[in-house]
Length: 228
Image (cartoon, rainbow, N blue to C red):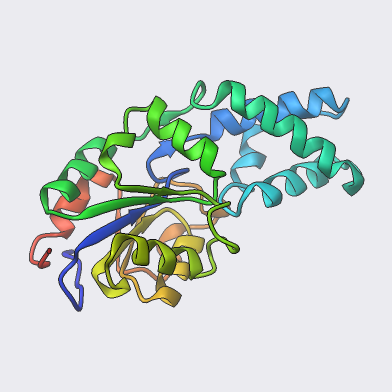
């Protein structure tokens, strides 16, 4: 069904992992390289999928707990994980079908675009560049851009300020309850994709203004919604 927005949309903020790019393969490769270097057992991809979306600290602590490693290894894990991810960023990931079409529809509607992710900014910018998506975005904010991460509304509010748009005129597009909670608290309308991670929970149970099975469907949601 068409999206209902109280004010004309002027911009969109889009999440990265699970929304635009399936990065599970990158996480799996980097985490298991880290674990091997720490002489720890590997972790399966299906377990990692439930850890994605709340930032790198949560990802690493959850992984260490999953393999029964002591929490004291966290700093060593952090250093080895960053070294591993830096070398393979984008190698084992893929852009979801419909993402390029959806981004093109948003740009054609005259909306400014920002990417907002809990992924470290260095990795977010590198991944967007590697996948050819970087030119579409006016701004990119990683999980280290602000003092708090999603689901806190602060990153969305700061992104809106940087875009020069009011939250009510800025559409949030994500894949999880984190994205929806941040959008609700910030006052942004929110649409969720149905194919992302969402910590293993059914995404259609999340409070959102709309759901799409492909980002290409955003064009249909925008019909009847004023932009600019």
